[in-house]
Image 1 (cartoon, rainbow, N blue to C red):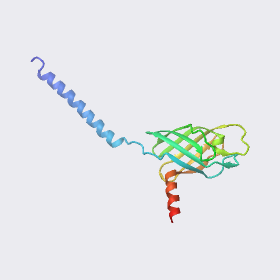
Image 2: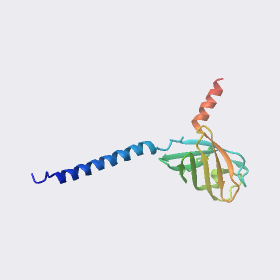
Image 3: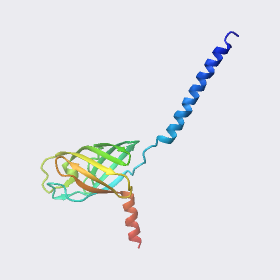
Length: 169
């Protein structure tokens, strides 16, 4: 019965109350302020505003994205039924607010249809996109030291739904 002194009971009561108040405050703040990033679509068809430099004909490009929270891994590959391209997730990036950025290396064959392929050149590529309108994402593609190219990325399922509805009419 020596342990039930008024001073020790008051100390333990204040300590437990303080921890509970801190826990409730942190929980309330986290529920109000911390938000998970919005999920983005996995597959987009990328339409460039103009051809790439030194490219006779550009491939129809597809952007495949895998998301883990705010972190992204992606591959920019051509949509080409005759050839099977190796789809390595060679682009890395993040979502920051409503902006998405990707960077990495892409080979020449993925980007450009060339009748005379020389050697497999790798280009440094960065992509910045705004996720404000998720049906039609606009952005900018920077390739090595060339001038930036504007592009739009359309989710593949949206395109399939649009083409189905136009075929039914």
